[in-house]
Each structure stands twice: as C-alpha cells, then as structure tokens.
Image (cartoon, rainbow, N blue to C red; front, side):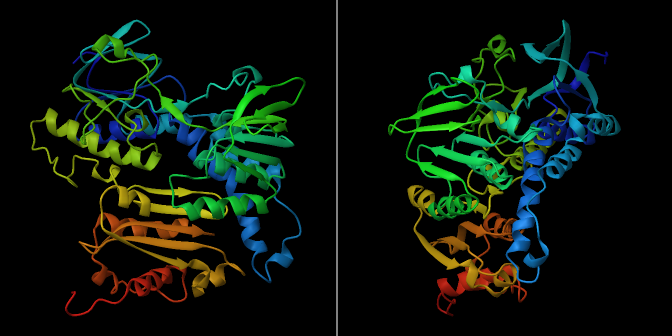
Length: 472
C-alpha cells in the first residue's frame, strides 16, 4: 500500500465522518479522513453544541424562577456576556486541536484540503490522487439554504452559523422560518433580551404534533417574542442600518438583523459527482446499508443522504456504514435484514428528536397524523403533563402535554411526544419502547418511580386502559 492508497477514504470529518472512520479502523482497515474546514464539523462548532450552550443559561434561570424558594434567590436576568463566553468553551474558540488529536489517537490518517471525486474509488486533493481499495464514504453534510426572496441576499442575512457564533447580540432580530433551528434560536435570543420576530408561512414545528408548536409559540410570546404565522416575506431591503421585510399580508417588520432558518441543501456542490455520473449539488440516494444506489463502492452517510438531518441519526448511520464496509471488504456475512447490524432501520419511523425551546419538545416515531397517513389503525392517548406529581415538583404551575400513538393491531407504540420543561431526558425510555416494539401489556410492568416525571407513562397507560385476560 502506498501513501496515497487506503482501504477506505472518508470525505468530511464531522461527527459522522469521524464515526465512519473509527468503525472502519476498529474493523482492521486503513482510513483516510479528508476535511476542508474544522475537524469535528458543524455539530461541534456551529450547530448542536454552541446552540445548546446558548440556550442552557436562560433555561436554567427560568427553571429557577418557576420554583418558590428558588425564584426569590434569582435577582437578575441571564448574563449574556458570560453565556457567550461559556459557548466559546464548547467550541474551543473554534480551534480543532483536540479533535485532531483524537483522530490521530484512533489510528486514522487526516488530510486537510478540498476533496473531489475524480473517478471510481479515486479522490483528488490539491492535485494528488488518492485511491480507495474498497470504499469511498461521503459525509459532507448539508449547508444552509437561502430562499429566493427578492433582496434577501443583498442585505447580508445571518445564517444559523452566524447566530450560533455571534459575539454581539442585536437589539432586534427577525427570523424567517418556524422549524427547529428558527424556534431554538428565537428562544436563545429572546432570552438575551433581543426583540425577536418569527416569520413562518405555516405553524411552528409543523412536522411535530400540532400542540407542540402551539405550546412553543406560547413560550416564545412569554419571552417577549412576536410570532407571525401564515405569512411570508416578499421583499427584503436594508435602506440604512436596519433590515426591512415586506410581508405578503401588507405589513412590514424592521430589525437590526435577519436570520434565515428555512432549510438545508446537500453539501455536494463541488464534490465531483459529475465525474461518476451523478448530478452536482444533489442528495445521495442510498439503501439501508448507506450504499449509494447504483454503486458498489460509494457510500453517503449523514445529512448528505437526506434521510434524517440529525447528528445522532448520522452517527447511527456511520456505525452501520463503517461496519458493513468492513464486512464487505473482508468477505464476512452482511446482516442487512431490518434491525440488523449493518442497516439504519431506525431512520424510517423511529427517529428521536429534542427541540430545545422553552418548553422543550421531545419526540420519537410517528405523529398521529403521520401514522394515519401511513395506513395504521391507531389510538391516540393524551395527558396533561402538569398533572403528574413529578412535574409539579419541577416547576410551580408546570405546563406541558404528552401523547402516545398506539398501533391497535399489534398493540405497540408508533410514536410518543412530550412537551414541557426538562422533558428531553425522558425521551430514551420512549425510544426503547418504540424501537423495541414493547407490547402495551408489558409496559404496564415498567413501573415509574414516584414522584418523577416518568409517572406520565402510568397516566398514558391508564388513559389507554388496562389489559384484560382475554386481550392479553
């Protein structure tokens, strides 16, 4: 093997690419990891970690203010400068030295530069051709997408990366988009005291259960944000220092900055896809082993395949992809049956997600509407989360809601949604129930400790009804 030949080449050294490489090396193959920016990728420096660091300080202050005896001790508001400084510690001031050390320690070779696929199992970086003996894995993620609103590109709009890395907080901020990123960043900046206006052409968090977006909208309004639903921007301008957005209902919004949080596009624009018969700038269509359809050597892992644009799901895919690459390279059996070692089955309808708004939204699986559209015979059970003893101890006047969606034929859960303060850490139990297809009658024996918020499981099961000997 030469210094330009490896068993596997991975393009993109974010969380997903790192995990592909790690699994490949642990399987006994050599791996070259190529990155044009910071090792660790968007999640470490511009997305998951910095955004949650921005959100946490305000969430902690508000949680204390909701408990008698604690709120009297909270005499000030969130310290913005200290919050930004804490955020910087999570990004290591945008220095990837620690990630580079990890890569080296894992036995992975790292190459800095822009990679282009120039042939079958061939990747060129700065004029040098690198050859993969077995596979090339593309883990270049996704990039913010700018909608074609007249004048928007000319006003130097913020992307989500600008909002998560900012070192100064604007007095006012208009946010275009009511999805997860828009709602989280609206929560963070409203918590800083910024005058926030969210502009969404439909409901907030429209992919979640409807009550989730409604409760999040209430939470944002309580923070002083303005929520404009069912409207879109038709023109954007910056006549002086402020940005002016003309809306299709005839109104205008003026803000110091405008943040665009409307969607993502694949990170494949300059990847050389045209050299292997694929369209530049396209998503990579893969099977459940993450192999790009029509190829026996090219894999698309993480956001780039457009299955689920979430870091944890990309890392899940990376483990499957890394392991199956090793199995195929060494001629070992491939376990590609549903829920097998070498497939990402959970991508289809068992995806967990937390939206770190106030209140939080934690969900797994299908919503009631999605389950109905998929043809399932379902029963939906709702319960007021604030009525659970554990929740009332968490916050005085706790507001929240829980829902479970049951497949009536198999008597297993298809989806669960929690909305409320501190619900994120309850999600894994629901994920296990959905992925494991735990029967309703067995869930009755999973006794929740009292008094914890997990008692919501007992209340949901009571709402569904106890099993009878004939039904068991």
